[in-house]
Length: 228
Image (tube, rainbow, N blue to C red):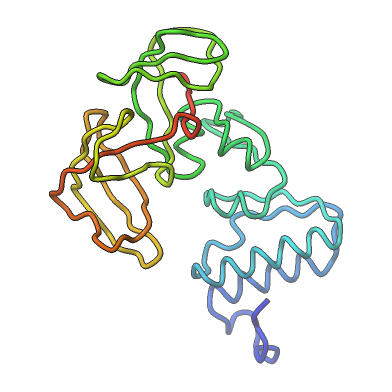
């Protein structure tokens, strides 16, 4: 649990994060058949939280424990779970594997809650196995089934946004209103005809700068459609 050298101390003599790790260790060492963890890592810093959740997952699998893990941290839920239940207003909004919830959200709430997502208002003009939608002046055919026509929302994940200085057949003009270099990626906020878009791109030799007008593109297979 990352507490080597603290064996002579009482839990009350430890920091809040260290006490939380002691509580997790006390629960796991009994090898219970069912383990309930309620926000077990909330007081830990980001790097230690990642390490401890990996340890919890490995111990759970090695001992064959059934663990119910309650958390508001979506990344944490996806990292430790075989199945996730997302609750909204005391009701189940969607249940499934982490991949199901991220890649096939049932509604706009799930799309926005599990990972970052841009929700873009569109009009479904043709229903079927392939769906026709309009987004401003764009007409798109998506490889996504739809049962009805009318108002809907497109889900565009930030890392699926394709940013370029050159216009293309499926692009929107976009003004860079914010750019943050994070080392291995650059985060952008874009003003577009579809509203504000959050995008994550790879660092470039000549990065996009705030105030610059560029073009936002996307591959139709990367989009998801949910009810409005």
